[in-house]
Image (cartoon, rainbow, N blue to C red):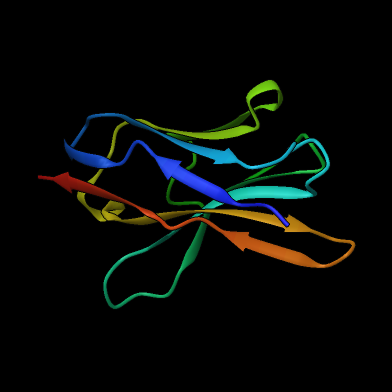
Length: 117
């Protein structure tokens, strides 16, 4: 199992930047995929960015070119750098870890990101 703790959310004006951090309770080197999801009020949770097998990156079309996911294995931490933020990016952002064997998925508690126009 792995526990995840997010930080770095907050209120920012449109066009601004934020960096989210997700600290894992164990080495992320052996975790198959780590990513960020978000959920806005009334919407389903959606994938924002994911890194799998250590190097395969996947981004939602809505954030391509603006958001960057990265990892620091020494710190067991995953980051989400968010630039040129838009009001539609407002949501609770959740860190996610997926292990293939044995199958396990872990979620963080979420961090609020609010972008004002």
